[in-house]
Each structure stands twice: as C-alpha cells, then as structure tokens.
Image (cartoon, rainbow, N blue to C red; front, side):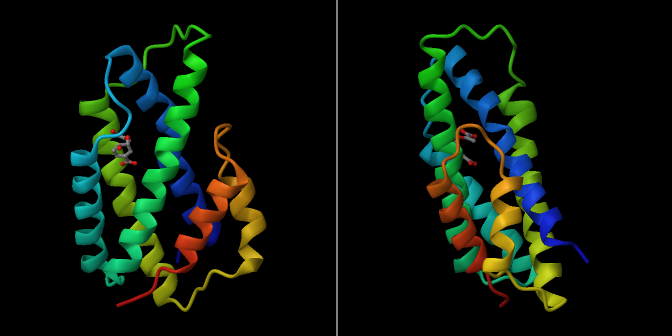
Length: 157
Ligand SMILES: C=C(O[C@@H]1C=C(C(=O)O)C=C[C@H]1O)C(=O)O
C-alpha cells in the first residue's frame, strides 16, 4: 500500500512542473489561467476518482485546490521573470507537460484510493511531513494548508 510520504511526493511532483509551465507561457505570450484546460483536468480527475472508488466531489475540491496552487506558483515566478532572464528552455507544454500532469493526477487518485481502502487516514500528525515534502519556493504556508485541508477531506465512495 502507498504511504502518505509517497502520496505527498506525487503531489509535489505535479507541482514541480509549474515553473516550466510558467516559463513556456511567458515565452509564448500565453495567459497563465486556462479555464478550458482546467475543465478538462477536473473532468479527468472526476472520471479517475469514479474508476478507483473515491467520492467525486471531494476529489474535485482537491484538484481545484491543486490548480489554485499551480497558478500561484506560475504568477509568482512570472513576476520574477520580469526582472531576471531565464535561458533554460522549458519542456513542451502540449506534448510533454500536459500529458504528464494528467498521468500524475491519475496516480495521485490511485494511490489515495489504495491508501484509504487499506484503512489509512490523514490527520494533523501528517502535516509536518506534508509541509516539508511540498517544496516549491513559490508556495506559502497558507497555500500548503489549503492543499492539506482539501487532501484530508477526500473520502471513499
Ligand atoms: C498547468 C497549467 O496551468 C493552469 C493550471 C492547471 C492545472 O493545474 O492543471 C490547468 C490550467 C491552467 O489554468 C496548464 O495550463 O496546463
């Protein structure tokens, strides 16, 4: 069965793509927020929740919170890009990053379902590990708290 550490780490991996997303969008004159894409991401997460036996509404809430954190990282990094040049080329948004984000979303749901079916729970005891595992330089403690709260609210069907 997955461990909380493994689940937190997969969530962190999804968030770790967001600086590349921001750099790609800045280089291509694209807006950070893409509502059409958010609807697709939420729809995929809802489908995969259903498939693995998770309560859909709680999973949708969690993914909305992940998307908010994703955008917070992007806005803060894009502000930094106004005064610092970045010479690294980001991974391609359409062919590399977005497919990876969908795959990681499925992995997060599968691991969560296994963990909860095995009787696992998330409590205040897990916060310390969560807070250190989510390591984006652009996330504030308030962002991490919102993510942790949405995570603790996920339940089985
Ligand atoms: C990651 C992206 O940026 C934002 C965050 C999203 C996400 O976390 O899945 C989806 C759409 C965007 O509003 C993206 O455009 O793919």
